Image 1: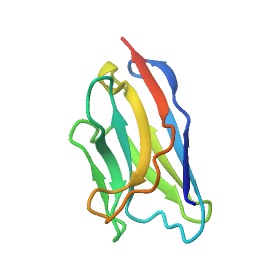
Image 2 (image 1 turned 90 degrees about the vertical axis):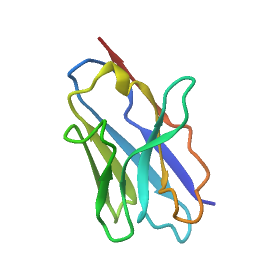
Image 3 (image 1 turned 60 degrees about the horizontal axis):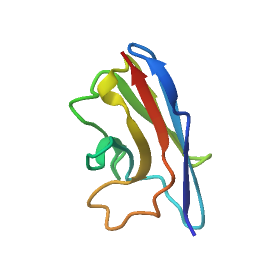
Image 4 (image 1 turned 30 degrees about the vertical axis):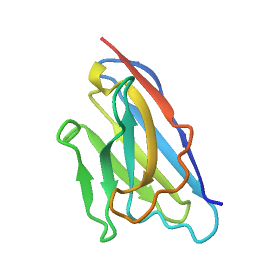
Length: 117
């Protein structure tokens, strides 16, 4: 059974930074085609950053230039460095495979990011 565990969220003032981690465990687990999603209250879950199978990165327009995705393949961990945070970045952040990858792993509990103005 694959398990994804997100961590690193918290409360930060606007302009601040956070680094999220997604630790993946389980058999035959690859962290290719994986990304970070976020879901604000009352809104749908959206992809904000990801690696495709070729290793190229994707960023939603709303986070370009502020967020950076990285990974440690040996540790099966994916990171999201978030700088210049804005109140609109407030959401629960999750990691999982990219849309169109064929399937999703079971969703983790996510990590709450709250940005105060």
